[in-house]
Image: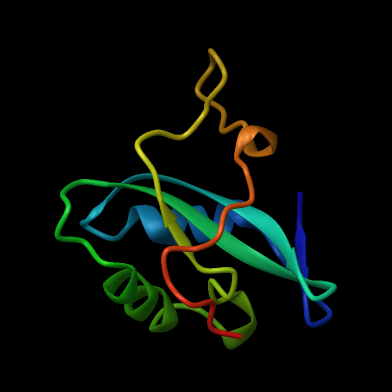
Length: 105
């Protein structure tokens, strides 16, 4: 399901692919969150180790993406990502949580 950010369509799978390129990201899912009537991508991340920070991930992503594709909904660290028996991410089962950092809009 695409996320519409400032008139542009953003595919969660594209953002997930970039996130998985980060050495500190073990698993992830990107969902749409709505704040003040605007859609934003929010990343839910399983870290490889506890030293990985939201700031380091945002910096990594900002270097690779157009401004409208940035994780303006923030980052939420979690223990696991819900998946189907075939390994597909169950995006609808991931709750919209307050991010672990201030959302950068």
